[in-house]
Length: 493
Ligand code: ARE
Ligand code: CA
Image 1 (cartoon, helix red, strand yellow):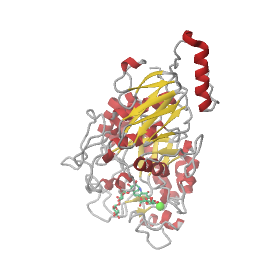
Image 2 (cartoon, protein in one colour; image 1 turned 60 degrees about the vertical axis):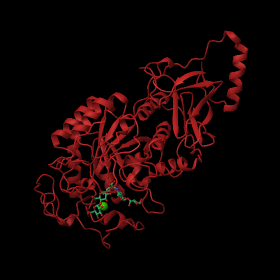
Image 3 (cartoon, rainbow, N blue to C red; image 1 turned 90 degrees about the vertical axis):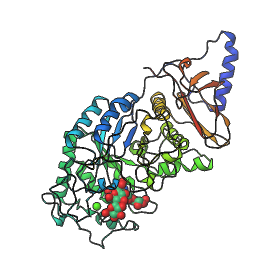
Image 4 (tube, rainbow, N blue to C red; image 1 turned 180 degrees about the horizontal axis):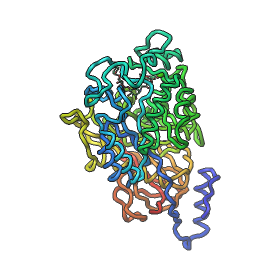
């Protein structure tokens, strides 16, 4: 039955009622046709996870559950320090780090590819380490000196014409942000053809191992023209994801970096989470791009990442069910490409992941995880990629495809919205149970909740978790405090 997509919502219910009356008892119950699943698009950031563990994750969890890509931590050789951020202080472009060897990296890319999962490598190309420390380099590197023999001359650093920029407080000058040192890291002269060539061969090397693209670390600290020139030499289709943190009033904007790829849209997370604590939801600009956001096709959206969970994010793994709610709302949305974040618990901002005696990061598995824990020990992996709710929301996404997000509905501390005709999500962020009714053009009937486990086959009888119904054109959710629910039309297996 063709859906009356243009009708306003209130009229829709009336039409449904009239149709029911007219057809009377002869009417067969309305059916949702099974839909072909939308192509997977969701990424997962596996922070400080070794290559062998990522390969296993691809085969056991990520591929089978429909994650499209993994963002790894930087694979470059780096200084030897215990803090996680040693990964962001490269000393060479060798693929040898505490996360694994070159061979292990290549094996990961191949195994993930076979599981249908792309690898995006975090590329630190704006700078090298700033440390002049004879101990630098993983596993006894030959690049133990400040001048990186064989890589760059010292002339390729310190090209900042202004005062040395060794704190990141001042973002008022374009030159200072782009050409001076970010937190004392030796800033590369990315305008120099020689430097561009060096960086280009590093990226080519990773591509030769099969990576699908790159996160460009600290892209804001390189002129967009420099990044464009470097990535312009790469094969067509290479995914470029620039980290350009939107800052109010700063001279450099994410928009400058969209001509050659995607950017992480920090405003998305900043808008997503405040309603979770105050219960005041308001719809974003529906039906397209959003104010203060890059166009949807350029946007990577996230609840938190490795920096923001240590900084500005007000909802993280520590918030348990509220974190699930934030992820559910993001994954239900029609804006941007979501990236889910999975790291490890910490109380010390600098603490690295658990390591072996030789300094390499310990392998980890997420086989047992199905949701957030009440409490974590430091170093314990959060395993968000294995949470039932997240996996359920990937199925929701597969079902709703490109169906537009419809106007939101509020009820006390509950809020929800339909993805037209395909699925409905609802959350309750308050401490009282709430029943919320959300208009939908999905057929009346019972549906399995994707958040608590979904269905094992096409019919509601096979529900693993909760079940909700659509009655007279409204999805009805009786929601416990701090909980989420999502229903969708069946997806062809
Ligand atoms: C460490 C020490 C420093 C020391 C330095 C050099 O913490 O005290 O001076 O080493 O020895 C990560 C860590 C840093 C770490 C660095 C190098 O977070 O603590 O420094 O690695 O080991 C800005 C940038 C943005 C950047 C953030 C952190 O614009 O690109 O700062 N994010 C990326 C990565 C980080 C990484 C780096 C870059 C460096 O994701 O993990 O740093 O490779 C406003 C502004 C933003 C600004 C933000 C935070 O929002 O708009 O531009 O982000 O504040 O200050
Ligand atoms: Ca720079």
